Length: 96
Image (tube, rainbow, N blue to C red; front, side, top):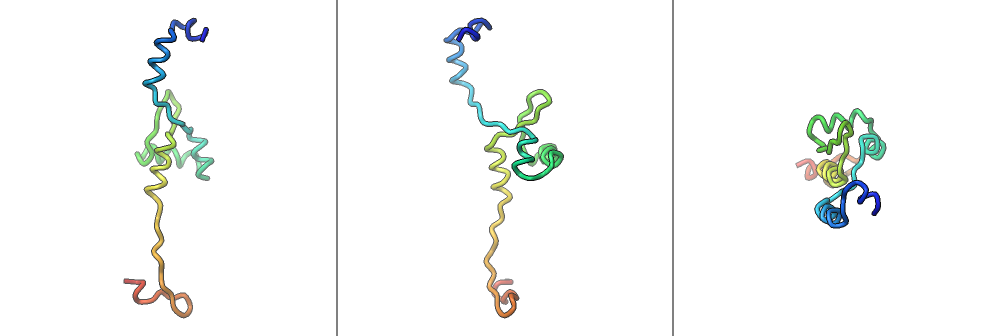
């Protein structure tokens, strides 16, 4: 740990900081856009509208993986099963 000692940090101080920091994996706008197959502008728009919560470090906009999972989970749709008869028309029971 010579670098930490050189910067004025002791092993004791480093251990105390390590216990308090709960670092989570962060993805940048480009990474989120590529993973979801949308534009970076769309990701930034979602953040600007408050639909995605970001961590800002300087000019960088980063997202926690938990936040991305929450966003996707809220938008999942469960398709209701439809009953069909001749030709794929929904039955009267399915349209109620």
